[in-house]
Image (tube, rainbow, N blue to C red; front, side, top):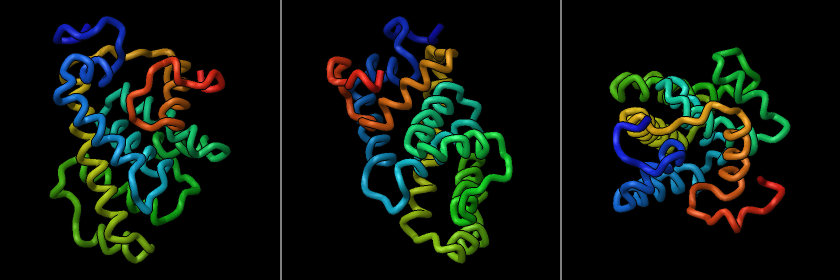
Length: 187
Protein backbone atom coordinates (compact mmCIF):
# COMPACT_ATOMS: atom_id res chain seq x y z
CA UNK A 1 0.00 0.00 0.00
CA UNK A 2 1.50 3.32 -1.10
CA UNK A 3 2.10 6.00 1.51
CA UNK A 4 0.02 8.44 -0.57
CA UNK A 5 -3.22 8.07 -2.53
CA UNK A 6 -2.19 6.90 -6.03
CA UNK A 7 -4.22 5.11 -8.67
CA UNK A 8 -4.88 1.56 -7.45
CA UNK A 9 -2.76 -1.05 -9.20
CA UNK A 10 -0.61 1.40 -11.17
CA UNK A 11 2.91 0.09 -10.55
CA UNK A 12 6.07 1.82 -9.42
CA UNK A 13 6.90 5.21 -10.77
CA UNK A 14 3.92 5.11 -13.15
CA UNK A 15 1.55 5.63 -10.25
CA UNK A 16 3.66 8.54 -9.02
CA UNK A 17 3.80 10.14 -12.48
CA UNK A 18 0.03 9.80 -12.72
CA UNK A 19 -0.39 11.25 -9.21
CA UNK A 20 1.73 14.34 -9.89
CA UNK A 21 2.07 14.85 -13.67
CA UNK A 22 3.63 18.30 -13.19
CA UNK A 23 6.83 16.68 -11.90
CA UNK A 24 6.23 13.18 -13.23
CA UNK A 25 6.32 14.21 -16.87
CA UNK A 26 9.70 15.88 -16.33
CA UNK A 27 11.06 12.74 -14.67
CA UNK A 28 9.69 10.61 -17.49
CA UNK A 29 11.27 12.86 -20.10
CA UNK A 30 14.59 12.69 -18.25
CA UNK A 31 14.61 8.89 -18.12
CA UNK A 32 13.73 8.71 -21.83
CA UNK A 33 16.60 11.08 -22.63
CA UNK A 34 19.05 9.17 -20.43
CA UNK A 35 18.15 5.68 -21.64
CA UNK A 36 17.10 6.30 -25.24
CA UNK A 37 18.58 9.66 -26.18
CA UNK A 38 21.84 10.27 -27.96
CA UNK A 39 24.77 8.46 -26.32
CA UNK A 40 27.75 6.38 -27.42
CA UNK A 41 26.48 3.77 -24.94
CA UNK A 42 23.88 1.46 -26.41
CA UNK A 43 20.34 1.48 -25.05
CA UNK A 44 21.02 -2.04 -23.73
CA UNK A 45 24.13 -0.88 -21.84
CA UNK A 46 22.24 2.07 -20.36
CA UNK A 47 19.36 -0.18 -19.26
CA UNK A 48 21.92 -2.50 -17.68
CA UNK A 49 23.45 0.41 -15.75
CA UNK A 50 19.97 1.46 -14.56
CA UNK A 51 19.16 -2.12 -13.50
CA UNK A 52 22.55 -2.53 -11.79
CA UNK A 53 22.16 0.64 -9.73
CA UNK A 54 18.53 -0.20 -8.92
CA UNK A 55 19.57 -3.68 -7.76
CA UNK A 56 22.28 -2.17 -5.54
CA UNK A 57 19.63 0.20 -4.13
CA UNK A 58 17.35 -2.79 -3.48
CA UNK A 59 14.55 -1.22 -5.53
CA UNK A 60 12.65 -4.30 -6.71
CA UNK A 61 10.40 -2.48 -9.18
CA UNK A 62 13.15 -0.53 -10.96
CA UNK A 63 15.70 -3.36 -10.89
CA UNK A 64 13.27 -5.84 -12.42
CA UNK A 65 11.77 -3.42 -14.94
CA UNK A 66 15.13 -2.19 -16.28
CA UNK A 67 16.63 -5.69 -16.20
CA UNK A 68 13.71 -6.87 -18.34
CA UNK A 69 14.26 -4.01 -20.79
CA UNK A 70 17.99 -4.82 -20.90
CA UNK A 71 17.23 -8.50 -21.57
CA UNK A 72 14.89 -7.51 -24.41
CA UNK A 73 17.53 -5.23 -25.95
CA UNK A 74 20.45 -7.64 -25.49
CA UNK A 75 18.41 -10.38 -27.23
CA UNK A 76 20.59 -13.54 -27.41
CA UNK A 77 22.96 -12.11 -24.78
CA UNK A 78 20.05 -11.63 -22.33
CA UNK A 79 21.35 -14.18 -19.74
CA UNK A 80 24.34 -11.88 -19.18
CA UNK A 81 22.01 -9.33 -17.52
CA UNK A 82 21.27 -11.71 -14.65
CA UNK A 83 24.93 -12.62 -14.36
CA UNK A 84 25.81 -8.93 -13.93
CA UNK A 85 23.04 -8.44 -11.36
CA UNK A 86 24.20 -11.52 -9.45
CA UNK A 87 27.79 -10.18 -9.40
CA UNK A 88 29.08 -13.14 -11.36
CA UNK A 89 32.20 -12.83 -13.50
CA UNK A 90 30.54 -12.26 -16.84
CA UNK A 91 31.72 -12.04 -20.37
CA UNK A 92 31.13 -8.32 -20.82
CA UNK A 93 33.82 -5.98 -22.00
CA UNK A 94 36.35 -4.73 -19.49
CA UNK A 95 35.26 -1.21 -20.37
CA UNK A 96 31.65 -1.96 -19.41
CA UNK A 97 32.87 -3.61 -16.20
CA UNK A 98 34.71 -0.41 -15.25
CA UNK A 99 31.67 1.72 -16.10
CA UNK A 100 29.48 -0.50 -13.91
CA UNK A 101 32.05 -0.17 -11.11
CA UNK A 102 31.83 3.62 -11.44
CA UNK A 103 28.01 3.41 -11.42
CA UNK A 104 28.20 1.32 -8.25
CA UNK A 105 30.40 3.90 -6.59
CA UNK A 106 28.01 6.70 -7.57
CA UNK A 107 25.16 4.67 -6.05
CA UNK A 108 27.17 4.56 -2.84
CA UNK A 109 27.95 8.28 -2.95
CA UNK A 110 29.35 10.43 -5.74
CA UNK A 111 32.56 11.22 -3.89
CA UNK A 112 33.42 7.51 -3.88
CA UNK A 113 34.44 7.82 -7.55
CA UNK A 114 38.18 8.37 -7.76
CA UNK A 115 40.59 9.64 -10.39
CA UNK A 116 41.88 6.07 -10.58
CA UNK A 117 38.38 4.79 -11.47
CA UNK A 118 38.12 7.31 -14.30
CA UNK A 119 41.67 6.59 -15.50
CA UNK A 120 40.92 2.86 -15.53
CA UNK A 121 37.80 3.40 -17.63
CA UNK A 122 39.64 5.71 -20.03
CA UNK A 123 42.52 3.22 -20.36
CA UNK A 124 39.95 0.71 -21.63
CA UNK A 125 38.56 3.13 -24.20
CA UNK A 126 35.74 4.85 -22.29
CA UNK A 127 35.12 8.35 -23.55
CA UNK A 128 34.29 11.37 -21.44
CA UNK A 129 30.70 11.17 -22.73
CA UNK A 130 30.39 7.48 -21.75
CA UNK A 131 31.71 8.26 -18.28
CA UNK A 132 29.40 11.28 -17.98
CA UNK A 133 26.35 9.28 -19.09
CA UNK A 134 27.19 6.44 -16.71
CA UNK A 135 27.49 8.79 -13.73
CA UNK A 136 24.30 10.66 -14.64
CA UNK A 137 22.30 7.44 -15.10
CA UNK A 138 23.60 6.10 -11.76
CA UNK A 139 22.78 9.35 -9.96
CA UNK A 140 19.34 9.67 -11.55
CA UNK A 141 18.42 6.07 -10.81
CA UNK A 142 19.47 6.43 -7.21
CA UNK A 143 16.92 9.26 -7.05
CA UNK A 144 14.25 7.31 -8.97
CA UNK A 145 14.75 4.30 -6.69
CA UNK A 146 14.38 6.39 -3.56
CA UNK A 147 11.30 8.08 -5.03
CA UNK A 148 9.58 4.76 -5.81
CA UNK A 149 10.51 3.09 -2.51
CA UNK A 150 10.18 6.22 -0.37
CA UNK A 151 6.49 6.43 -1.28
CA UNK A 152 6.02 2.63 -1.12
CA UNK A 153 4.74 2.42 -4.69
CA UNK A 154 2.84 -0.67 -5.73
CA UNK A 155 5.37 -3.29 -6.79
CA UNK A 156 4.20 -6.30 -8.80
CA UNK A 157 6.02 -9.53 -7.99
CA UNK A 158 5.06 -11.72 -10.95
CA UNK A 159 7.98 -12.16 -13.41
CA UNK A 160 5.65 -12.10 -16.43
CA UNK A 161 4.65 -8.50 -15.57
CA UNK A 162 8.29 -7.44 -15.87
CA UNK A 163 8.88 -9.49 -19.04
CA UNK A 164 5.95 -7.69 -20.68
CA UNK A 165 7.16 -4.34 -19.35
CA UNK A 166 10.65 -5.06 -20.70
CA UNK A 167 9.33 -5.68 -24.20
CA UNK A 168 7.31 -2.47 -24.21
CA UNK A 169 10.13 -0.37 -22.73
CA UNK A 170 12.68 -1.98 -25.02
CA UNK A 171 10.55 -1.22 -28.05
CA UNK A 172 9.15 2.26 -27.20
CA UNK A 173 11.40 3.63 -24.48
CA UNK A 174 9.84 5.89 -21.91
CA UNK A 175 7.45 7.99 -23.91
CA UNK A 176 3.80 7.74 -22.90
CA UNK A 177 1.86 5.48 -25.22
CA UNK A 178 -1.70 4.36 -25.02
CA UNK A 179 -2.26 0.65 -24.64
CA UNK A 180 -4.09 0.73 -28.01
CA UNK A 181 -0.80 1.50 -29.77
CA UNK A 182 1.17 -1.43 -28.37
CA UNK A 183 1.57 -4.07 -31.10
CA UNK A 184 0.03 -7.43 -30.22
CA UNK A 185 3.41 -9.21 -30.44
CA UNK A 186 4.69 -7.09 -27.54
CA UNK A 187 1.80 -7.91 -25.21
